[in-house]
Length: 378
Ligand code: RIB
Image 1 (cartoon, protein in one colour):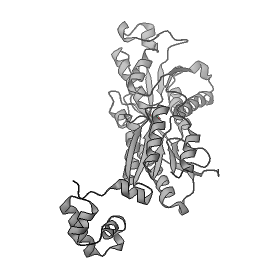
Image 2 (cartoon, helix red, strand yellow; image 1 turned 180 degrees about the horizontal axis):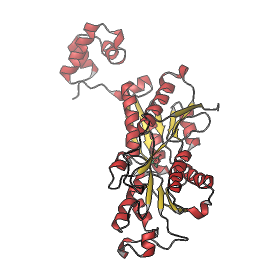
Image 3 (cartoon, helix red, strand yellow; image 1 turned 180 degrees about the vertical axis):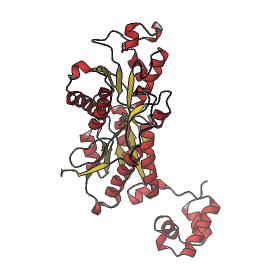
Image 4 (spheres, helix red, strand yellow; image 1 turned 90 degrees about the horizontal axis):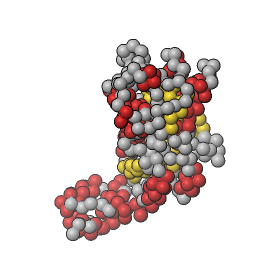
């Protein structure tokens, strides 16, 4: 049977209350007494009961982090930023994967509240403002991550409209006038904002978005959907029949309205990497037949068979900033004021869009600029 506090107290020759103080208020215990108690814990293999302690304290030493897709390296790097900051503050992180599904997200939010986590960081599938408002009203701080927040909420995000504009302006500057927009569900705010930016880039260049952009919606933002999107394209090589095509590889409709795209903006790198892979299988050249731009600038982007041009997000910094906002509100409420932090994305050009062999990734500033705007009062 596992040793309890009474066993530790007996072996150390102190009261049970002293053992409790060593666990919860060590500064109240004389150093030599604390050493005796800790030695007894070590000898007995005593493990404190965190559930009991959090019942007494009312809160755990854990944060909840709910992301859209834990297999997406974007969220892995964001989670690393969260975990490094939380760990330095003495907190553990409970990572939850919503899989871009509202019901799964809802289940996790309920579990995290039941566990009395110190706070929740979430990239919500949809807006979810009412749910998050309720969690906050019941006493659990929430920070929106990778999502601009509504009034009265803390949030950390990247200016995705600017990011979408950077991607498409780059392709327009290279002379492309027919660009596929491979994008996830518009219910995901990042997808909607990147699309807005793409449209803004076309309009600013003096063209008609309906003529330049060929929208290719995908159900999820992963490599398989990126590959499947290829089958909806009739890239110039396929249209001209100049590229040998295995009909078995083209599973979706290949007939598309208007001229075939010579470029594609994929609203995250996994879509772009899947598209590059499928184009290679079809014998199409990147960027010769199709120039590709992705979004996130995950580590694999630079190491891809065709190094990927991508819109870089400050992933680690997003996580750090979100964790800092959350713990400031949770542990130092008197110093806290709700605010929205918005980072500026940057375009990193590589071989997948440049007609010439890529220059090494563009020299980027070591830290993406961020604008801090006070969240308007509730
Ligand atoms: O989860 C969808 C996308 O939104 C990710 O790839 C990342 O770009 C996030 O911002």
